[in-house]
Length: 376
Image (cartoon, rainbow, N blue to C red; front, side):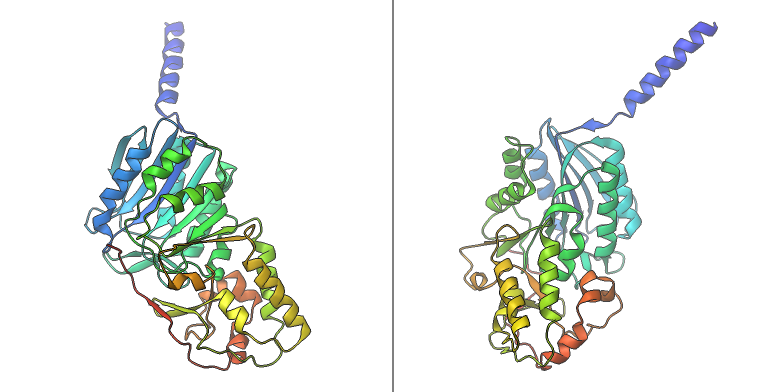
């Protein structure tokens, strides 16, 4: 009897172990899609595209929210099969992100992964517009901390972080994600919906699972429809510290007021805030001393260095040809002294208030006004 009981317990433990075993994949796409807004109608078609490109080696997970009262929904997709369940919550706080990534860690065994955040953008630190039950955004600091935590428990780092949202090209926010992935892909201006790269990118990845984040980004750009974007920018996070260091040296080297010809300054306005094209800004500043001139040369050289930054311009969009792909948060924004922005690393090392004084307090010409456009 005792022997039979032992055998029963062993078999039971094996059955339990089997039922909780992780799904092994060579590559996993991790999507966060809180489309509880006017993008909701595109959600199902995006999921169908993602599903059709998966196979035994390449899978995807999605946490989504749509314009209904069902709350968040979670999807597990691989080998063209899909499972889903409702979470019965509408919140977009940090714990919801963390629970999602913990669920991924508990259910999947994967070494290579790409993380994609889809939605409208907000202000400098806001991601993901949620309309129900109240209008709210996620905080990029919460996103950053959650992804870094996920990387730590995975003992790895994402190949690519893709910020699939409008006007996410500010160096201030991009710099915060430097430890989240090998590369970060984003759009300096508006981005279309629903985009069309999903299936073909998964199929292209199938021939080279171990491709770099750079190659994966190029696959995304190649397979996205030309009507879906103006440009994409890719930044190499292994090089971003040195890039930002030279940028800080440049802006902190100004001792006197700086004359800026605002008629020539390329500007993007989004969600009530202004962003200056970084190359345009640096180029038109007339440096009065040799130190500033030295740093200016270095910054411009870095902006043209494809080992650091690659700007994929849509050849069909004329205006974007002048832009460099990265923006600088204008110190003339009314909320420049907001405490929420002081949490950002660049706000701790560049004196934006002094920069505001140095740049003559003129009103920035609005070259581009971006709204939440959906490309048809």
